[in-house]
Image 1 (tube, rainbow, N blue to C red):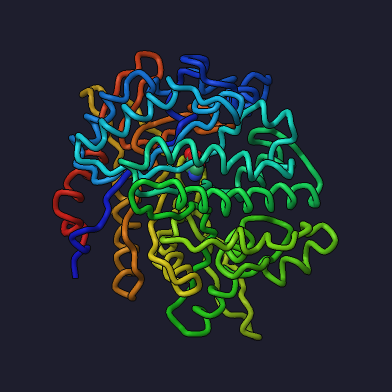
Image 2 (image 1 turned 120 degrees about the horizontal axis):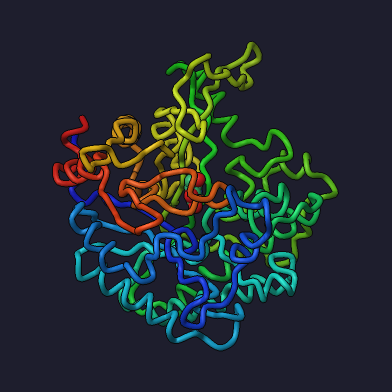
Length: 451
Ligand code: IFM
């Protein structure tokens, strides 16, 4: 069986990671603009001020995407570019940029998949308490409405939040991402609850304001446990590991998904967090639990699990020398077979892989090309595993490679190169890597050359 003819072959990026133009055309400040100014926060003092200068070079970038044959591009909108104060008056120049970007993509035959929030929270609203402010969900819904009113005549695919596990966990608990807070668990979980409310209210806003029938999802992190063997016991153990809260940690799938799909926090999580669990207002879960059209999920790696003597999950450590990417993530293609499968079984929605990819040590070789065989091999293995999931019966609609181009990798600055297109951050020259040429053939053959 080949990939379905309407399979969405895509690639992704996010506003702060590529746009640059941090202080142009009326854009407001974001928490990332401010974190980057603090010495020691970002590797080598890098910032997203210029990034890939996509704000000025989007036409060239769209041409690169078109040359690759991309069917879809996942982008995010910068909240403070649209609403410099986070709420109130909209910035016409900011909205006009997204108009041009969307129009350019459509003219190139590329479907835009738009994420409303990929971490560049308006600094003005952070000063008013950020995600801890009970009004934050209304602020976000107001912003969603402005964007949807403007773009929904041309955009149908929407995602609300990217990786709440990360912007709440790394941003508010561990403090290595913006806004750089190290809060106690009660506040962390309250911020997370407000983000879930923001998700729910923005889904309502999208559906109310959309000018064409919208397809709405979000894009959490998939923390994948995959079975060490195909035995039913190992499969059951991996499933259990994927859907339980095993320690005080937000990377567990269920904390940010069960409220959306089942209108409740997971029991084991509530037990574990005890008095720190967030207060849930009457009606909150009905707001959070808005019906969605697809389950977007960002998956990079997984952990092998087997059934212990009592059937309970036992994590199997990776063997010495197990393949790793440049940033030391383990290469585990099985995650793209079992992650979508378990998520589809539990949440019963079509799945999009909204991110998957790797950091690699790429440079321009003497021949002027960028040779990245690891990226080709990693992506081929993961796409084959995803295809296996589809053969197992999982309704997978598309795959977005992270990332279309090298970009600002948050606290790691420009140290990590995740792109299929190489970016020289001094000259802003783009060079499609070998993987881009390979992916072009994957798309052109609709995946036939993978199988
Ligand atoms: O670059 C990030 C992206 O912003 C969110 N998901 C993971 C990627 C790689 O770390």
